[in-house]
Image (cartoon, rainbow, N blue to C red; front, side, top):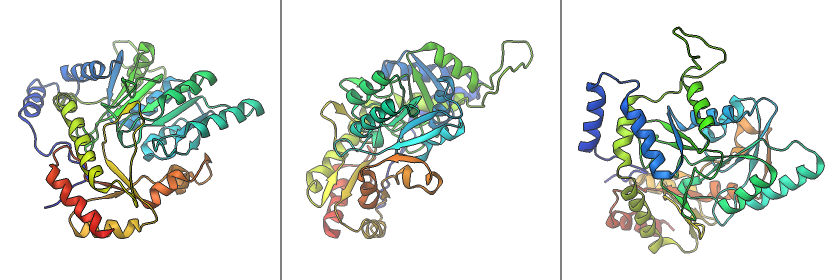
Length: 369
């Protein structure tokens, strides 16, 4: 049997078939009622006031930076322990990225490093960040209490990359709703998928209205195609929204399933030399992927062994500050994220895995160690 890293939809449900067929038969494949229904369902789930469905999470981040007025020459702070789609939009708008390392408590952005840098820049007169992109890595919320206080204190626009954490909460509040804007992803391997797609959310209707305008090629109100500024073709299709809308009906069960899978791993292997990703005391993450760090162990050798055993694994994200494309970017580092990359792996995490499946995988982890 092959154990895959993440299977959000091992089978297509009758509800998904029904909604997708309805979208097709309506002859409204590009834009239709499911666009509005999908946006409404995300608003209701997360408690945000406004939502915009777009083609992917990266485009949503691009729109967020654009409508917040981030331009060439501005500085944007970002998590370094993340996927490149979280930070590429900084380059799209011509801004300068500054990467912040992780802490041990959450594996997310280190509030102490962030505070030290903000204090230093405030005193020296160095350019302050116009925005901060915070990634909730592997579905685990960052320390939102500390980070939000710092953003408020220094007047920084917080953008949450909650691509992996739809359904996660911090102190009872959904990730993606703490900052000025939040972003979700519905890529094929996410807990809820539409085969591709993203969502931009905000309590500020003017920001979403502007983003919607830009996402639709910035068409001015006119009986012909009139454009006074450059926009983008970032609209999500009615068919994709129909699929995502159907999947979203089961998000609670899917998150519970992934958390159950994580706990099954934890019961057997959460002891030296293995460390499983922790969770802040105020957080309830999605456990999108079960991430482990192997202290001083050969991560490459473990992966090769698991591949031979038909168990799919993936190295933890390579930090942005050591990616070749960002070799000249500034970074505030403490060595934490590089350790995760050097010694960490993600293991099969789908909500459809049984406890017996996880036990079989755990036996192989124990065997190789």
